[in-house]
Length: 391
Figure 1 (cartoon, one colour):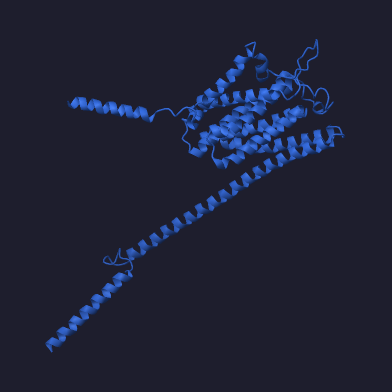
Figure 2 (cartoon, rainbow, N blue to C red):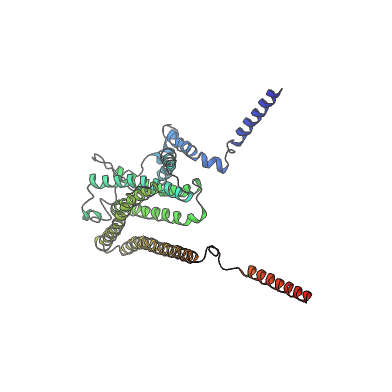
C-alpha cells in the first residue's frame, strides 16, 4: 500500500512537470516569437511552390525572380533596370532575411553565448554585433567582388555618362546586391518584435534601419548605384572591423584593445574617403543641370557623416570622463585607506606607550562618564553620612 502511494505521488509530479512546460497557445505572441522562423519560411515556400505551378507562375514570378529585364537581342550580358515590380522581390527577400537571421542566431550565436557569461544587456549587444558583423563582412566581400569583376574601379566611371548608360542598367549581381541590402534593413523592423527589444531601444534601431533603407532606395531608384556601391564598400569595411572588435571584447580576448585602436583610425579614414568621394561626384562629376540632385545628395551624405562623427566624439569624450571619474574615486579611496592605516598605526604607538593597565582603553564615552560621576557623588554622600553618625 505504501509503494502504491509513492507511485501515485511520482505520477502526479511527472504530470505537473509536463503541464509546466506546455507549449504556448497557437497564434499567441509567445508562440509566434518562438516559431517565427518556421512560420516565415512556410510563407516563403508558398511563393516558391507557386512559381513552379503553371497556373500561379505569373503571379509568383515577381516575388522570386528579378524583374525589369532590358537586355537587347543577341546581347552577351543580361541587364536590368529598377522599377516598381522590384517591391515584390524585396518583400520575398525580406522573408528570407528573417529566416537567415533566426538560423544564425540559433545555430551559431546561441552556442557561442553559452561559452561566455554575460549580463542581459551585454548578451543583447553580443547578439547584435554577431548578426551585424556577419552581414557587414559578407556584404563587403560581395561589393568588393562586384567592384573588381565589373570594372567599376576608375573614379570617372562613377559619374561619366550619368544619367544614361551605364548608370541606367545593372547586371544580375549588382541589382540583387541592392535588393538584398534594402531587404536586410527592412527586416530589422520585424526583429524589434521577434527579439523583444525594449521600448527605449526603439529610437536608435529604427533610426539606423530607416537611414540605410532611405539611402539604398535613393541610390537604387535614382541610378546612383555605382557611387552607392563604392560608398557602401568603404562604410561596411569600417563597420565590420568595429563589430569584430566588439565581439573580441565580449569574449575577453587581449586583442580587443588593439582592434579598437585600429578601428579608431579606420573610422576617421572612412569618413574622409566617403566625404571626399561624395563631394567629387555630386559637386564636380554630375551635370550642372541637376542642381537639386547635387545639393540634396551632398547634403544628405554630409549630414549622415557629421552625425556619425558627432556620435564617435561623444562616445570617446564620455569614456574619458568616466575614466577620470573612476581614477579620482580610486585615488580618494586609496588616500582614505592610507589615512585609516596611519591612524591605526599612531593609535597603536600611543597605546603601547601607556602603562599595561591603560593599554587598549580608549577615551570614555559620555554615557560612561556620566555614570562614573553619579557613582562618585553617591560614594561621597555615603562617606559624609557615616562621618556624621560617628560624630
